[in-house]
Image 1 (cartoon, each protein chain N blue to C red):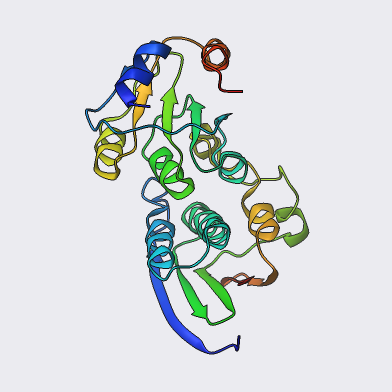
Image 2 (image 1 turned 90 degrees about the vertical axis):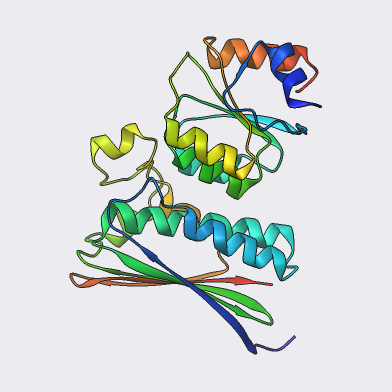
Length: 141
Length: 110
């Protein structure tokens, strides 16, 4: 299989709207299902996009998630506007979270968002500064 | 198994009428959504005390068989509407997660 680009699905994530977060991941999931993509790839992509969506809703001022489908891979690009991640190594440490108490009471902010994204991805790139964060995640088919 | 039969055996209260068949392959107990996301699998029963709308998103993304809210926690109206719309059964019980886990085990779900 080559690396020909097939399709892009995009959605917007609104800051603090973590009740609705998961909507984008759910539409990605149904789109992948209709393309006949295998269940374990769908599960990985759904977990990655859900966690990315929650992260953007909790920690940023808003952002976008793009899911690009290629013949041989799925690339999920998560871009948000500020304030960036001040300590990337800590952010990838299981259990470490900067989420507020209120968010944690709802079951978010377990400190498993980025570790889960990493766990289910085949490749992960992260760029972050005070203007925002861009995470590019690849899942190989 | 029919979801009303499932509710009867486990003494659960169904929170919306969208009755469907329930297939149960396992059980996961947890309230931290990211951990549930990573550990629960297709057709698992999810036992939790979380009641807000995002639990429906988690159940839908993972193709869970149902959500059971324990300790008599009251579930938000928005959550129930969303669960009904997506056909995800949601039940409640005044029992604890542990008591319910014992019942599931007695049912043969290990």
